[in-house]
Length: 183
Image (cartoon, one colour):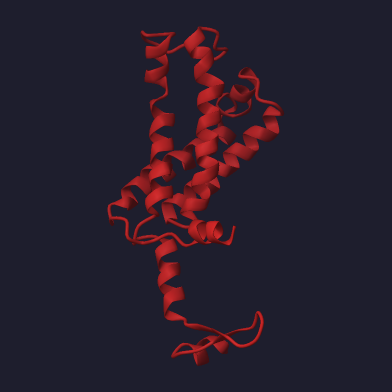
């Protein structure tokens, strides 16, 4: 369990610098989609009610808040691997709760404005956003947020502050920064 938390909270900064583009794209989409759930009823409570999500008011607020907070975290590259997990789950739920009914032609949501309107091709066309988001956060979860991220800044800071253990559970700062940080 300790190794899992270490993996989640200490991602490498070895991903390409261009990883920031994936973070900006995925984080930006989650951020504005979260805001839309609060601003437009048909994107939050109304949509959740139509597709039969339990407790649509609470669920829409939770999902909207998750998308806003998580979008900001992705953009900043902070806790990137950790926030990727609920986003993968959210995208799987979004796909299952809306696209199966579209495939079957029983969706309570408006049909797509152009052909195809139902069936596999309609699903593949309409699922493109969720697919892009899930692939983006899986990528970020695997490779980490890259060197231009708060996760990387945090890792570089931790590497500069050596720690020494004196006795069970005690931590003491050592090295050049110790006198400065103890003040």
